[in-house]
Length: 178
Image 1 (tube, rainbow, N blue to C red):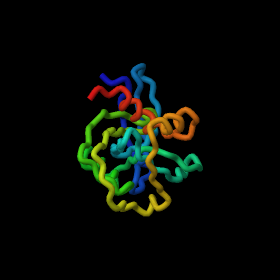
Image 2 (image 1 turned 90 degrees about the vertical axis):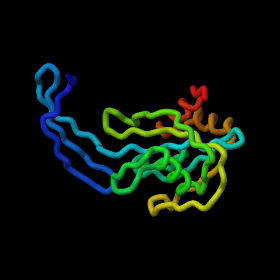
Image 3 (image 1 turned 90 degrees about the horizontal axis):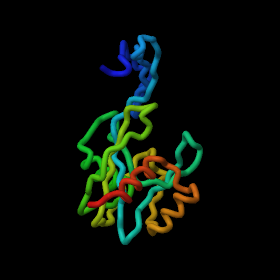
């Protein structure tokens, strides 16, 4: 039996990117409550590795009011889902113009399990070839740059890279034995 039982679920707000749900719940002790959370499909995060360095993207992140360096990542439009590797290849190509000869799955994580059902698959992309990016309107300010590994690690230590999914993905890479 689950620790919390869902009694009802209502979508209180929906856009083409997410749904906000409001669930009436019963806890294991019998008490009633409410749980609200974001319902979004899983996304893919790609670590593009080349010459002992990484391709990162930088874009303005409205909720935190600043630009953010991150690994390329994204979801399908209109709350659709897709095969994780297909999604990873498309996001890498669209955001950076890069295509990968090899795309290896490093793991599946959840970005904020107390606030959203959304998880993400992490892929290591190697054998990179440059092509033309096909950015969406929301990505018009996105820029891409290659950084040596040491500089990426300095950016992490100095609080330049603060996006938690990229940091967790980098941890998977450091632990990878493949």
